[in-house]
Image (cartoon, rainbow, N blue to C red):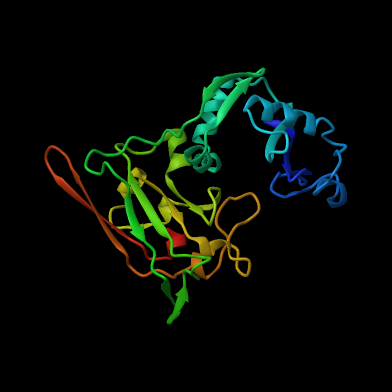
Length: 272
């Protein structure tokens, strides 16, 4: 969307600026270098107006000038920007969903507040009006051993949440919803796995499923499953063959028949 973008943070008065440093925009690092891009008590030459801009936004929200703030700035748009279309894209973007769910996100155009963002999930099937939550046990089987899936209290047990949509997830929804998004300890998505990797007894119903998984141990510093770019989850024991058959029976009623879905988790919770 932009030729270049910056993530600008002011924390305890120190200014840090991060940007993508590779052509595919997967690798983030401090710019222009670590010395002046991280915890700078002064200004950064690449974003010289960052502190003034931060002060302006803090004042708009009635916050003190010393308050911490993060600004994401795009420079050099590659094409004209349609605000309404951009808002719709952001609301459907997997990396933004958890932030929008847990925070108030406002969209401004030329200094004026235009939209309040909200997540618009696919409509749920009337037979499954609420998400299905599956606790993840503290240990998982792996090559004849028990693999820890939690290290409390810092890395507690996680859970998998599945939703059944009212209709198959086609078009844009198929690419952005027909998957499991994974979180570690925060609200950011650290990776994902497509629903098609589920071993479904009735694969045709896989197009109705979407969900998310919270597993804090995925971001343990000794074995971190987050890849640069936050695309597919990194490979490792927790993303291999750790979970045996965890049956989740989903019953859907139609006019003439009752259809039972048997979803069997044949990989790990991360492999769903």
